[in-house]
Length: 296
Image (cartoon, rainbow, N blue to C red; front, side):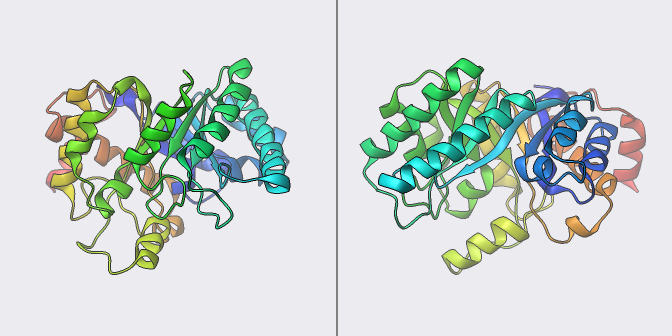
């Protein structure tokens, strides 16, 4: 594990897509998780957004996110299938080999695991010719897969080599999922790990959990669950997880700050995870300056 294993989510930053990508790269990262909304909202059009990513010099961790896809029937299913095909095309255009799919919260979605697995298998098969992997993330408030354990079960049922799971540390911490559950996972089945923390110990309702997830996340090392988050990352490392870690920190305060300021906080998180949690030396640019600042 080294600094190249870490990346940032463009949805965590304010500013233009070009400013976000420049801040991520200036902070020493070599990859970025790209929000589809950042591409299609580009003032010069989607093609210009795609070009900005391809010219940034950053590797694309993945494209996010296809939502409320699985478990639907009839016209709804065909509608979401068309949306999924367009997302796969955008994923390919931007040079990504991974599409993040968040488990459905639609009241119209079936909760039958075999139905959910059937739809995800269909999506994964559509992605194969494009060389794209599907990372299925179980949201805590989802109807079809509430958490990584349920998402892994669905992926196992679908039995498609390019279908795996996305694991979000926030979801795991907020739902107090036993980290021993990670031991049942095949590391080859984990396609992406998203990292963040938050600032309070308990969630009083599902609404508070959702609000925290979308507005008040903080970087690893900044929240009150550092020990649990460190345990999660250490367990993944021992399990043999070798793919990417992306900082998915959705925070309204950070969206009001210059992107380079927030990207620097992400750099601090990468250093904390690498040198303190995993006790490994990370080749971070300007390391001495960073240490001096942390000790001030």
